[in-house]
Image 1: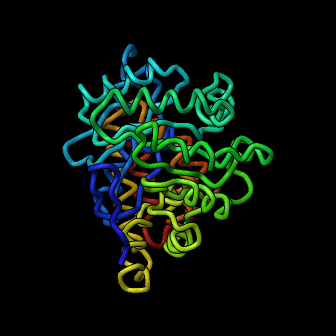
Image 2 (image 1 turned 90 degrees about the vertical axis):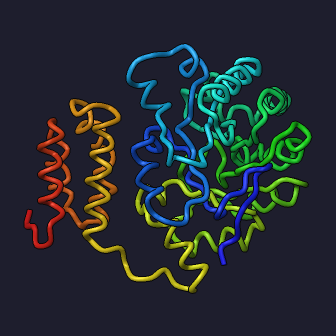
Length: 331
């Protein structure tokens, strides 16, 4: 059976988590995954404290959007100012009632690390620990940290930093098995994740990286000793990976392939939710980044996918997506 997971006082039904991914894990996508089975916890996109507390407009509304069924939900924030990070955590607690706050110490993007945020904190462990202490002390819900194994292969600092985080009040740690310099190239290092697991006492460590199948999730748990598995890109390619993994641990098999009609219904409902969240005038453009993922699952050819990306009206895109996904469609 797939194990459950407890983070602080938050008890999850499964140990499978949907990773926070900027531009992807918005309310429109999370809602679809939650209609499936197997998910223990989902996260918001990575949130800038200033945008959260001082911003406005439709973009901020979409970033903070949630609903009654969108639980349990972790809210991920990033930054390098301990006071501002703590203030944001309090703001979220008072206005959004989060079950969990997560601190991003793993984003490798230059525009983030260039400001000393995200994975750049791996090179400044004292500041990282101060941020953890300030945020954990500011709110009465579990506070967690997501990090990478290090800045580069010469600075694999995650085990030492992670070992200090429980004393800072952190309730769980997620570690992605790549360095910041790797970004998303190469392979996730499960041996390095295991080193973090072995270094941390008293709180769960969650493994992340290259989990694209139920077998990958099993391998992550068995080879690292981690308490949970966070899935990112694998869920973009296959939103059913959570229910398939749950079935795999229960029955030793994932069951039959996902029916084409389920792929189609999920895709169209996702587009409808995107339209409701961002407005019909914006949805077609915003949905372009999803078309390669759905094209793979539905066997839509690359030339046809490129054609679909040209539609600007959401109503027209919806009709063409439905037509392209129909059995027997010829490009």
